[in-house]
Image 1 (spheres, rainbow, N blue to C red):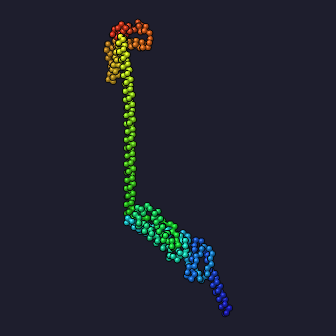
Image 2: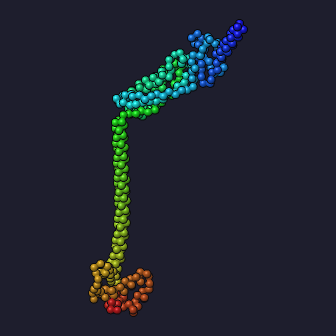
Image 3: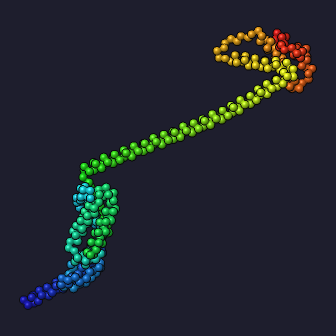
Amino acid sequence: MVIQGASIVIIILLLLVLITLYKGIVIVPQGYNYTVERFGKYLKTLQPGFHVIIPWFDRISNKANMMEQVLEVPSQEVITKDNAMVQVDGVAFFQIIDAARATYEVNRLEYAMMNLVMTNIRTVVGSMDLDQLLSHRDEINARVLSVVDEAAGPWGVKVTRIEIKDILPPQDLVDAMAQQMIAEREKRAAILQAEGVRQSQILKAEGEKEAKILKAEGEREAAYREAEARERLAEAEANATRMVSQAIAEGDVRAINYFVANNYMKALEQLAAAPNQKVLMMPVEASSVIGSLAGIAEIAKEALGKEGAAAETPSSPAAGGARSGRGSPIPPTGGR
């Protein structure tokens, strides 16, 4: 009996030793920190690795996750500055940087972080108009992050990022915003169309202006050249008249014959060119005038400096008649 009782005591002692050794050895995994208490008071923080503590006196009070954590912020209704009701939700990222403070400075850390983020989102959103709220998410994120990070600092927590996920206005407000967007787009389209018409009219007016300017310049140039041509024609006619007058003054009857025949031929040319003239009636006296063409030939010969004897050939009796001082044209030529 005594031997059996001693065996039981030894077994119990061995079990106590094994339990003591087991409780005295602590292995901390990577990404975690353990806080140790002795007699209910904080003693130290165990970093990742192998550690030995005093069993029955020391205990692990908290296993703090030192990795960055994600906190889902539930949707909540918020009234904006212009009294619009919107639903807002988000997500927060935070990391414990001091395990002891995160353990002993706040109770239920994640719950405290969630309420802190929701409260500050409500505060920031309530200070902004709806249009500003929908178009300035980065500003909302920055303001909420600044406030929450400052408030969570004493807890040994670093807030790395806060993002607003959804901002949902009421359906009637969404419909009104859609109508406003459609009206704005129609207004912009009308403005662009009016600008296009205005620009088209301006370009058309400029084109017409340039065309009129070019037309006026062309007419001016044509008038100038026509006046110059008329001036030269008048000079030529004046020279011809002067030469004929000089010839008449010198007693040359052939010049009179040339002058009369030239004007007569011009008149006949105008009669023949008339669009309503079908039959041309020649008077009998026209043969006498046509016969004066021999006088024109004589003048041309003298102008070219040919010999005077060629002008007195028997085949040109009209020339002899002209030299005799008669004023009438030569009939033989017209008779032929």
